Image (cartoon, rainbow over all chains, first blue to last red):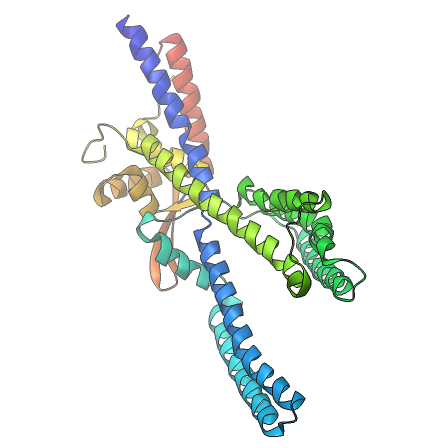
Length: 261
Length: 95
């Protein structure tokens, strides 16, 4: 009886130990906090540049429209100065964090965020030159497709209401392709974005009014894409916390000897 | 049927199970996950490295040094063999 109980207990312990690789993998695949920080930094920087460039541009436009040449020229001069400063700053940034230092900013952010927790990472996928070339080509096509659909909407050939569903036709398969390209480095949680994007498109076509209209129509492009990407990465981060908690439960050894024998 | 004593030690078994799930993990991750002391973890990893089961890489992340560990092919095989042997022993009760 005692032996049976011991065997059952040993089997349970073995099963617990065999779960360790699974939860370690789930943790490593869903460490998305660095991406979230980079996304937030990119959005804040874009908004900052938009305001910095928009203000003197608006000033110049108003000046020329009202016939105030002084104001118009001042606006242009300020805009040119700002653009020069921006170009110099961005060049310095690229020289520090680009080229052979690519990935350095990710490492620095990761160090700051994860710190004492340390790092566990999945292997980078083996991507052939052909696949990489195809990836770049699909990216270029995606950009052209997005600009094309956007232009059709702005010129009035397509209602802004259909901007997101039309973009979904290319973006969703592109996202799924990227996932299969990047496995096992990333986990399936990134598929939340294309899934939600598809649901969003279907709901619009079904008549649900979840789209921007009028002057805000252009937001139908970036808002769902950035929003659902952000949501997917937040869910990934929360899942990685859960996975780490499970892993620590499984991985704490009992009765370990002090001298490591 | 012999149980690999290097792997059988509870902390080392857990180190190898963690490393078998990922490509690499660094010292801080193993330390925080396993709940061992610095010295204890270092000694266990040293034994695994001497047995050829774990490969150590020392790099820099930015300006900070970083030590990371990977399971070797030998280590992966040894771990698989360890579980197979353990299953046989449990089934037959023979060592």
